[in-house]
Length: 341
Length: 278
Picture 1 (cartoon, helix red, strand yellow):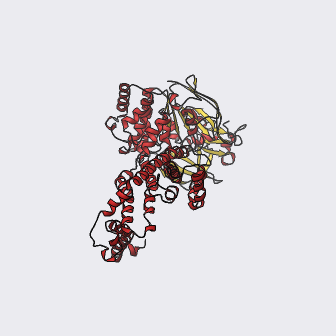
Picture 2: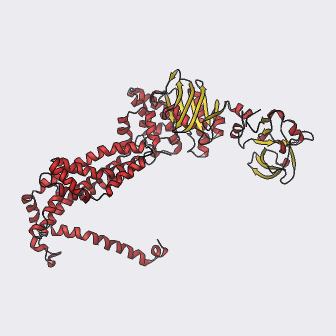
Picture 3: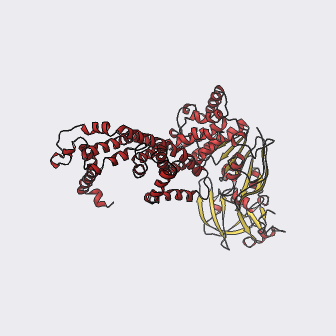
């Protein structure tokens, strides 16, 4: 097992910089999630760690060993691909054994490891089948199994759940979390789905345009986002931003110094008492999800935002309401720098 | 297709009949050729013996005894096999490189390769003959025929292989890299097994093209490296119209390739890549 150290890592294709001077430390045994919108460089970064993509600057070290010029298979990493990338002409057993065979592992050792991994993933009955005879979920397990048998120091997952249907995605997500608990191996996981990031990660790394926007535990990112991008990217529905003109006097009184925007998460908005109203708005649409409802509101200046509530009677459609939130959950930002204040 | 064609009774009868008529029309010359090969030269030109005649193997005996059929057939076999092998040994790496490590110019290179097929062969006939005969001393050698057959088929072979290789998901190759497979392992254990169906059909097609090639083999050979095309050509006009003999030669030239195609067609229709991803 090993941690990772990335120093001034850069990647460019010709004149286009994809990743610029990125520093990152990943502790041994950590579950780290790279998250960000498409094109932010998260997959490229993962592929650079895997060795499938050359780096144009800096160093990547796995454990204490700089791996810049080391072939993918010799880095002690194993990767699970988005498309599974199983060898279609080999049985499940051979798929899992292939990497070990390349490493000249003795046959009985290969057999032991493949069977143990199959046992863990409950795919023992599938060992003699070919990938085409498997369902999407089963293929995903085989792909994970292929990574497990190599007993890598670091697991790399490249959006492994995005080809599964919703129910299977939740189930597999839990299995991956269990797997991490049992193996205790460092795992790096790429996703654009912030729910996956929140549920799986010890540490989330939010990327945008090849730069790290914030590194922290899911709760840190959720409660104390360092900038407006992270604030909106983490959490669903996203955080509402209120400028001074959309706030009541009370609301405006919170804006001090650099701060000119208040960020409030939809679930923190509630009906105000007599003195603590921050915003005046009119609910104009309700999406009732059953256990919870999303109330789409408009301020007097026609700014739209969402409140999340369990108490629908507090939000009569078409009638003006006064809303507030506890001061402890308010986030303050500067609109010019986009940073938290 | 218009709804009229799809639903009417006229359509359900008319189109199959038209198809049969066309098929028979196309097939007839070949049928006639095979039939004629069993007639004497005298019977061959008489309309009353078109379908009803006394069959004879005389032409075939004549062909093998007096015209050295086997030598030509062996030459055809040797040149086609080696040209196919050579074409593949150049084409596989070329197509592999372009499919898995494409550059900005890959498309241009592919189009350029194909454009060489647009050059009229007749335009280079004289330079080729002069060079090989008077300067290089390669005229009428197996080497020359193999080289020429390889070169004229290379563009089409690279194009075919390129499209087959393209169908192999890149992630599978990358998974191989993660598993630590060597270059040769990647070729032997991943690329070729996955592209096997495509590789086999490319090889077969290349072999057929080589076997059937007439323009160059007729003009760049005389005896030593002469192929079946040359044999057919040699049995033509000068001595008059010997249709029986000519038909026998032609049938014997076409036969092997038809049989080969017949046996291979099932093996060729195999989509191994299906189910690899997603």
